[in-house]
Image (cartoon, rainbow, N blue to C red):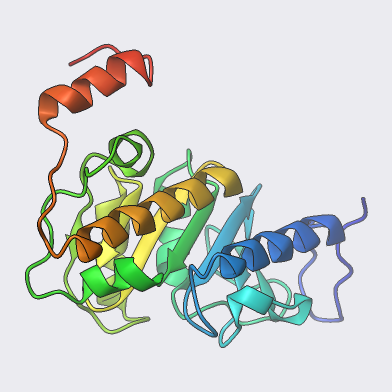
Length: 225
């Protein structure tokens, strides 16, 4: 696998054509599941000291190679001349703060975004076992900040320091993980929980703390705290 060739005055990168193709394929996969529409949402993938990020104005569901930005994670500088998403600040911030994270997805799926726009948002999303096991026992709600703003980026990075899934008021959702599959799973179950909450008309039950502890012991193999 050869590194991607760069034009004059563009910095050298070790990202390969195969890695760019994989990033594009995963972006299309998320789009096919309607996790985002048209230009909504953005995706990033850590590869060494660099990250692939969907470019400004790109449509993630049909992302094309010329809209894939390669950025230095530490400096945020695009090394291939493609401007990254306006939300790249929080993508890169998460990657810097969380060495365990390789993939970050900002999405706006139908039911989860409906919940993000509710006046009275749920305080507990644990409607099925999949939520505490894969999405997170707690899902922080970030107040509304203008998309692309420094305030939004700071709030997202702060919320993601100890969580893998968050809800953005009147905006959407962010999930992160070690792999594309883990992020896909988190986003899909996040949307499932919100669909249950919306379609139940607010008349739903959640797992108790004891039931969640039981899952950690017998499903996830963790000792109960």
